[in-house]
Image (cartoon, rainbow over all chains, first blue to last red; front, side):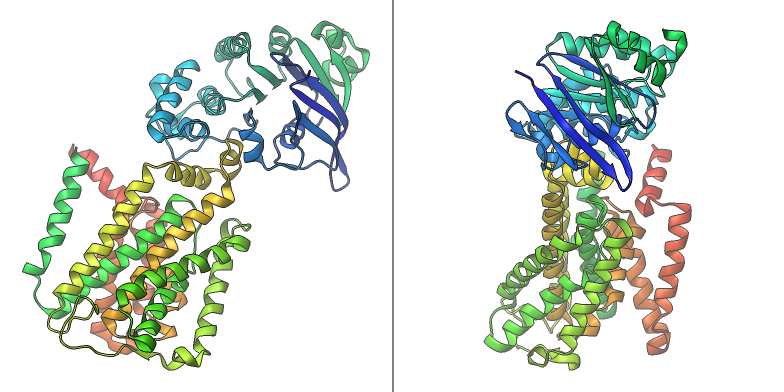
Length: 239
Length: 317
């Protein structure tokens, strides 16, 4: 049985079709990569899954529960955590406070939530930055912060939007192994990623989007050899 | 530790102040400072912590003043009971206002609260049963009585009531800062969508911030009515009152514990001073000076006086 089922999702903004009849599934414990050129509808798809945008057609389920029509906070409480492509830390709060906000979802009191937030920070390697203000962090550190914040809500499924985008080369291996650790610990993940080397290293399955439609869905080796994926996204050099 | 010490010291000074300040007009200024500090602290909970800039808080102030005054006048009910009743009315109205208005963000929210404030003021001006545009005198009671919240012998008792209310607002803020709701408020202020993605019911949190803020503001309204013993829509429901509350908090430092007191300490004497010096002729001069100060603050030090204070503290340390 699938953890996440996306069936026939269509999302239009006026005349622009961002998502066209998109369907795919995520099994428990799976790490699925989503690739596609800019404007393919990847982030919109995350927004639709998490309730920020409502689809014009189609349905999303987390196991048996229907997510379509729920608010973002309700989707989060059902166990879907996410990060944003355009990072959105709470700038005027400390790193620990940022993560505590997430931890409060499942913790009964603030003291407990702060302890759990500290653990989440250690897990992503930001333990020493706990008392710094979020606005003082580098892009790579902010990515880790958003990851810790989402993790602190104890999600069953994590949606990561561009883990390595805008991050300096030196920080990428650390982020990759962090995500792989989460995956090995049993977390189910859907990861949007532009860096093909990163996605090939992590994903068990890849879904390729182009102009709002799924053009390929399968094991990484098969998807990267797919003629349409090569034409739309990878370019001839990859073939 | 240093924070606690500063706080304890500040409270000690505030408690002993009437012993040194004995002239009625000076005590009046102190009372107004505490009243505005309390109102700004209440406003700060919604605007400073939760990020929803309201320019309609006179609504809640006026509801507090009018509820207790109407109960005193029509049924001779103690203003303390009226104070609680006024807070309840303000909370109920705040929830009714919040439901549609919280759908708006940023400037649009602020503009909607201005409009609502004007509507409520107009309603009260045309409502004869509670005095209409002429206003209401609160019946004088002698001798002085805490039960009836009227003191004619000396302003000292008003001072302590105002101090107690300010302390209450401070305490509520302090407790909120460390509570789940406080974390949620600040997260919403920083980024509403990110907050929702972490499971925060944004609408419910905003309504809570609004309720606390409105209830506290209404307490101030009842106090004002019992202190001045006359209220009318111009004095307790005007836009300029809403703006002054906001200015005090912004000048002191938005979203800080002691900012409201700091802001009131600067602004209230300024307003009282120009009023005394220039009489009715200088009616808008204080607002002119406020305007100048706000421009200065937002350009030079957006964190308000509290940020300056902290800078000085760090330099000294």
